Length: 121
Image 1 (spheres, rainbow, N blue to C red):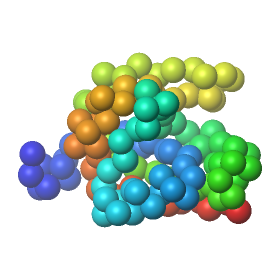
Image 2: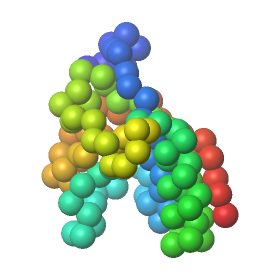
Image 3: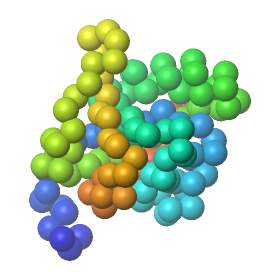
């Protein structure tokens, strides 16, 4: 698909709370891709709302990594529909579970750049 075609492709906005190490790998990708999962990370978890991402970045990433970041990115809606929405807790605790072995394909369907929208220290 050419970049021209992407302009008219419907997209879904996702967020991802992340720590400094993962964010550095995203930066090295030119803000275009998520890095491969580590062996103990069989699933990639983007979330469906900004508030949930903020809570994780602020309350978990800061405590464990010294800093937490919330990223926002767009994925082709038709592609992302293959991943059922998972409710991981309360009504607004919604995420997608992308198997690690599908992350390269997932990255290929990101439209535009991954953006940092919040930072916590």
